[in-house]
Length: 71
Image (cartoon, rainbow, N blue to C red; front, side, top):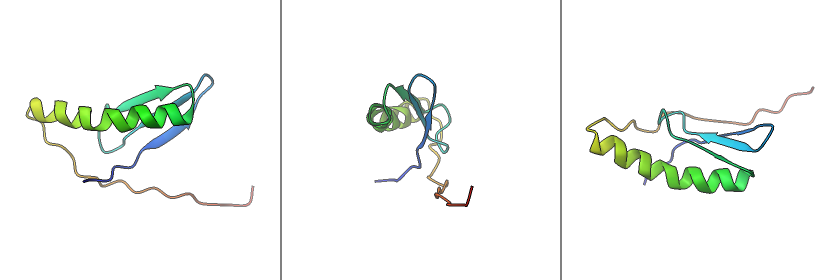
């Protein structure tokens, strides 16, 4: 089991998600929940495809945090 950071971004028409450690691994949905479900399914498929193509699968190396500041 590996833990990859997923970044979620709200757009004008829905939500996008991507995995910084797995370039090209992206998903989009009408809601954040949909984008999360789709990226959760996309990650193992993306890794399988990389392995089938003989590409190295990057280890998780990205960290994320929420930082609160006075605005």
